Amino acid sequence: MTTRPIAAAVVGHTNTGKTSLMRTLLRDAAFGEVSDRPAVTRHVEGATLLLNGEPALELYDTPGLEDSIGLREHLDRLAGSEVRDATAAVEAMLASDAARDQFAQEAKAIRQVMASDVALYVIDARQRILAKYRDELAILARCGRPVVPVLNFIASDDARTAEWRDQLARLNLHAVAEFDTVVFDELGEQRLFEKMRTLLDKHEATLNALIEDRRQQRELLIQASARRIAELLLDAAGAVRIVTADRHHPREEDLESLRDDIRRAEQQCVDDLLALHRFRPEDCHPDQLPLEQGQWDMDLFSQEALRRFGVATGGAAAAGAMAGLTVDIMLGGVTLGAMTGLGAATGGLLGATKTHGKRFYERLRGKRELRCDDATLLLLARRQITLVHALLRRGHASQEPIQLADRNDKRSDARAARRKQPRLPHELAAARWNPRWSSLNRTGAASLIGATKHEEAIEAIAADLARALHRGDPTWP
Image (cartoon, rainbow, N blue to C red; front, side, top):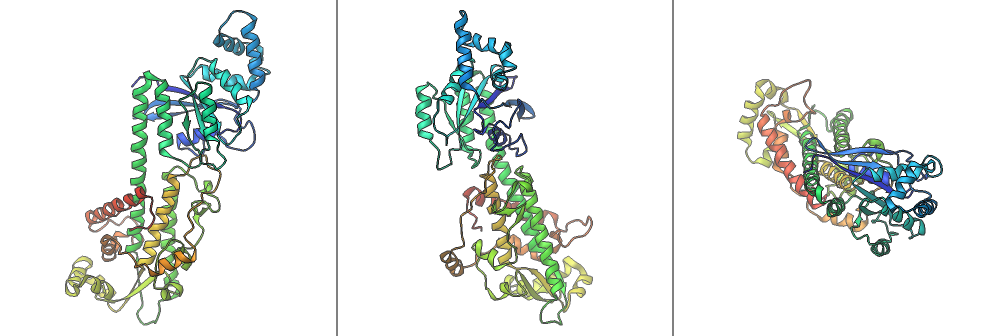
């Protein structure tokens, strides 16, 4: 790898998506300003991609080329006024008063191209092929730098990708990259770097390393997302509230207290996932992700949320006061439901006594245990997986809503009702037996009991969730 970073000037006509490309490559939704207004970028702005903490690729966002026809005519006059090559004519223009007056905006972009190793010429593939674009390419050809045309917005139904490729081939530009700054495609980014590599032999090692680093970073992002979801699920599974047994139903305030704790835990997970993927809550508008200002647009403890995410439920409890929660009678600190599920009542009693001690044993005698039910745990998982899937495909310059597949038709409802509820991982059952695993039960800086087992449970669930994220299927497990 060369010691000097690659310098790439991002150029093109106004409003073709130059700043959008920068945001996507940088994974930074805050870089520059993206707008439908013309000529938003007025100055050259730079940013750097790092490899192992060292600069590898310097990207320079430039003002839009607006008067390419006038500039080309001006360069033709300069080239014809005396014997000089095309690049010398560009240099003469940059040194003239025209670069500070008539062509001030174009000169900023051209000057950066001349100072760079390569120009990334961004094309809005939805636009018709006009003379002004051919003039821009002719001007760039005079700068003596390799040019990689980048067809942007190729995911649009209006994209004229084939027409543009044919026209670029006629101009002897064959190293064309297809990209989309709205619907992110990791292969599109990889091919962009590969096209640059074909034109920059001396930087081949750097670009190879950058391609591999991007692949590794995406894998780490998936793994980190899966771990954060696993932490949420263990927190929710282990959350427990002890309520009095002399009532037919727990008090409404007890129910809402646990629901609110789980809602807050999910919201914190959403915030963490947005930050992990370098998005801000304000980047999420109505119908996106599907979040509104970084919050889910339907309550976790609702029939509609279960239906939308294809979670089958018994129906009666979910529709009433106990929606999303379940109550077991406590016998010596062990629930009847847990004893039935494990088939080891005696061992469970002994285990509970050894783990929690006599004082906890006596405290739980004759009480009820209020917990999050399996359907809600499944809904929690599927909502977060859906969110991560959307974030992985969302370009950091996107200004449009992400359209998720609609799972709400009647046929989907009927299939969900017939489908047998999947068995949740046994690690979540273990969390029910270990309430100290859940941060929703702990106060202050209390340490985990059985921390090794807790970590093993997180890692096992995270590994399974990572496989679901790779598959692109939210129907986990």
